[in-house]
Image: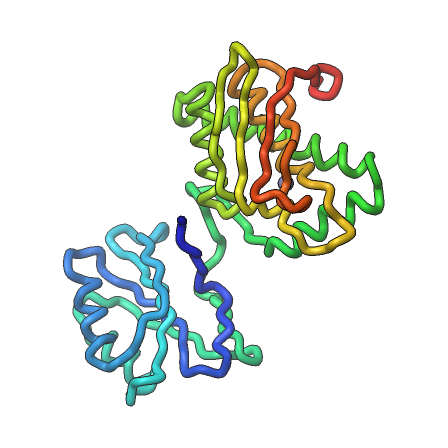
Length: 268
Ligand SMILES: [Zn+2]
């Protein structure tokens, strides 16, 4: 099973003695080892860390480190000074809890994936937004979400095809793996026989279908549209993904089957 990746961007400290450090390092071999040695010598636990080469300055990088001082006798100010004495360190800054128990990472902006700007929405917020939209606008709302997804899937597939030169099943697989990396769900192509038109894709823990409200069990519209767009673009024919199993209806996973359709009037 893949691991849970919890990014240290907004941290609930739960009252513990923890801090978020940003350390600018020279991009030289052994720099990280020197840094972690100082941290370990002072009995500090690194709860999580992100290492990123600097986009702004050549030859430097940043370590964003969420550290626990619970077992240490040193203060964050003193640790900061010790780290700064290292010849591989250019700068050190840290954030303490400021808003109740929360530490908010204000060291970075914007966020990026593949050098494209990205934003993070919480799944419960996004899912409830979709579901409220469907409830308010009924079948028109569902159709709107489906076509929003369809356009997104088509343009994503066209872009990834251009960048990777992949087509067909390989292109679909690449996009599904990228979606997993971005936290949408865990996807698998179970069958892909274009001649018989047997294309079956399963999704575990698809964010759009996670059950939260017992009176809503309609399955996915946005993702179903997105997948339809990816399949249409990858196989160069109008395909629609039908959701035959769904976690929102008590199934173990969501399952999509492709069918032929005609989008001509919508996509002109
Ligand atoms: Zn579903």
